[in-house]
Image 1 (tube, helix red, strand yellow):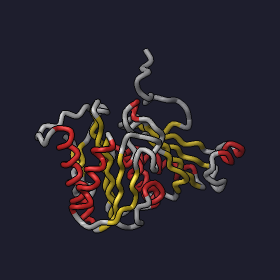
Image 2 (cartoon, one colour):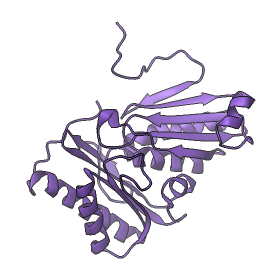
Image 3 (cartoon, helix red, strand yellow):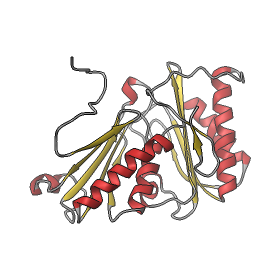
Length: 252
């Protein structure tokens, strides 16, 4: 019986690379149609195209792709954040990469799929809203393109929904340690009209880590009155909780 509630993990298409948590899928087109490529608004330099997309989450997948293109001869061509989260308050994502060698593009997608389990683990969702966090010790091209992160600097990202909680989280973060705001996004500013406030910030690694941690606590307290138990719904079969300790994650 076909399961219509999740993306297949056994696709036989040659373009298929794999899937991972948060309904994330990676595909590669070895030689995209020239007329279609012209319409995609990603330039015409590369005909080997990789696509990386999900229903839920944004920063985790972008951070994963950021590391993936650093490790290969692939380039991020575009990043979009569709209104999604399976009907929730936030985004999914749609990332297009390109390269001269299809093997490089495929390898980048493979790396991004693997790293998404690490970087997209800091997503908490319930019927009332959600929180999302991400951290990179050294931002690259993908994070710069998506969130205007300063290249080579530590970068932190937070999202809170509904948007009012996100603003409290952003304010808490900025009052914790001195960092530079890279991006500030609201329902009508920089998002696909999602019910979120998003803040990205760059600076000293220890400051970025502290600010992420402080905003995490502020967001959870808004939802749960400061209680120690946070009964978030599992939004994937395999969920990981990342501790803000220079990209070191552990399963719970």
